Length: 335
Ligand SMILES: NC(=O)C1=CN([C@@H]2O[C@H](COP(=O)(O)OP(=O)(O)OC[C@H]3O[C@@H](n4cnc5c(N)ncnc54)[C@H](OP(=O)(O)O)[C@@H]3O)[C@@H](O)[C@H]2O)C=CC1
Ligand SMILES: N[C@@H](CC=O)C(=O)O
Image (cartoon, rainbow, N blue to C red; front, side):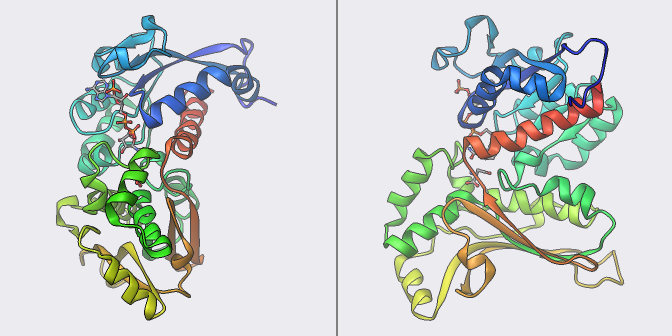
């Protein structure tokens, strides 16, 4: 039974896809190859109105008529119903996404740097344009985390979370721990598998994890986190010797993001957010989270302890989160 009920079951939803890299390609493939299945499930026909890229010659699989190097014009085109942003970076992503939101177009993005850096501005743009703004894919790949925090846990009181939020770093640390693999070789594999950011320094320096922690903290504590104030240390100084010595003590090193509210009685006390490599006992639930998998423990007053785990990076897991958001905005906006 389609959830979009109308006399015209084939309403067409035009999607502007910004970016056709590791993530964008998977989204484009799902929208085009699973077109009929998605229409049967949703009652709407989702189609690509255009695909913005940096260099068209790198995208021979996309019809030339759909390609553009001008994401701004595509995202604000009159016939575009929804914008999916998977370019990364802040420029042109910020002006494009904010303009699309202000002009009333729902936006789905995977870009954590964008969401963490312009949290207030983007939410204001969405409010000004009465537009749905979704970013499930920006944190922990396929793990449903943003939506549970926005909805399922919104009546509860979260006291803290602790998580592994970067697939690239966890892949490297796991390879060093289990296979004694050198850092650089493991990093190269993570890049080849599509887990790393275009600038992999954002992964290994902990910047990407801090962006995600800022987003989760803003949602968990209903506040605006100052991203620049987050203490952040990456994994570039973690050596094989550190890994072995942790192993000898029954520990494993993980890049851990943690956040806690110091007291429940005073909402003005700042949050303590921290990103750093941490040796945790092998018996800790997060110790078994290996490879590009992410995991997060959330403690809430009523729910107790929640542990969410799953693929945290890569084209397909991220596309799963984007498509979920896409269908949520279509349902919210056009049903
Ligand atoms: N890879 C992953 O596992 C995950 C990535 N993300 C996020 O998703 C986003 C995309 O990541 P990913 O797919 O890996 O990145 P890629 O580098 O693989 O792809 C980026 C795409 O954006 C295009 N692009 C870049 N700049 C512009 C521009 N100025 N105008 C038009 N197009 C542009 C590129 O075009 P061209 O190819 O022609 O250069 C490319 O197609 C990032 O924000 C990332 O943080 C989120 C979760 C997981
Ligand atoms: N580079 C990121 C991609 C997903 O967010 C990571 O490795 O986790």
